[in-house]
Figure (cartoon, one colour):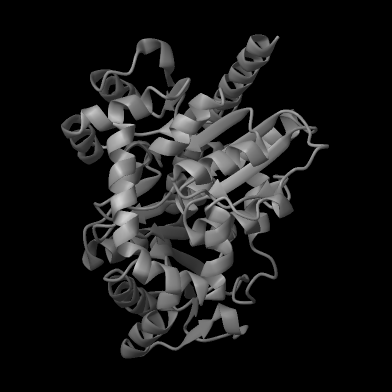
Length: 432
């Protein structure tokens, strides 16, 4: 399997080289990061000869996975104050977010290697990790093979296998089964994930069901508010705040129309609209204008306006503390939803659409306990939010139910930490 993978990789590389090489060589922002991801010039950011022990490398795919790992990373920092914590993310947005929220908790944020044999080897020789922690799923054959060669234990945390992914894994089991069996342990979110892994041929001895790390947000709730400094002046006793977070194209129109209708009955309502991709801020501002609404831009330091357009990174989670209720984006359109716990942790009730596939277990739990309501369209959105605005007791009751749920689910961070401690102890025993 690995031989075929590398042959395909080499063939594709030779075909694309004439296109990619000029782009990399003549574009500074690509040149430096590409050289590092190839395993070159890593000495400047390596730990050096006086490195501390153990060396733990945590890797996440993008913003969502980085967010899921925050409580675990901070717990690792406290448990191993003299250890070396490395963190990487595959996407640029993930790395930028990690630099913002994890800079004080890790020793260094490193690039993630391109999955070439020599690149992977350079990374492993430079950083010499004792344990590799993969958050959710971002599988790279050469990296996993390299970890085995260097006798570095690998653990998958917060593992999840959606129905769609499961079908793909089964169809190409010859490729994926060896990758999953490269891990010393796989900590899955739910029993259904464990069952699917067993069907894929992963042995019982490797599998654990430790819950969803996204519930770990409750383990350190006081830190969430710190992600937003210099609160917008609109957050005051004169306004009741509605945060619509991580919205995607096709959702802002619905939110803005619902907001206009609610404003007629509740003029003290104030919307904070946070598109998932801040590059769409101009587009979203135009949509607000089409509805006759004047947005204030957070990035420009503007105040007032009919709503606040949150076009900055890393502040959304902190603003949920100050809202009356929240809409969780990526759910009215087929974008698989985002994390509703960031609002529920503050006892804020949430609404979301029918597309919460990436958070299906959490969404179902919140709806069952009354902490969330699933809405299908603008009319349903206006009805639910209007009910909470008309009777604040209903809003408080819903928010309390959600907060109670996440409190009951807390402790997942400690379970994952215990597994990591066990694997590090086993590695030390093997070396002795």
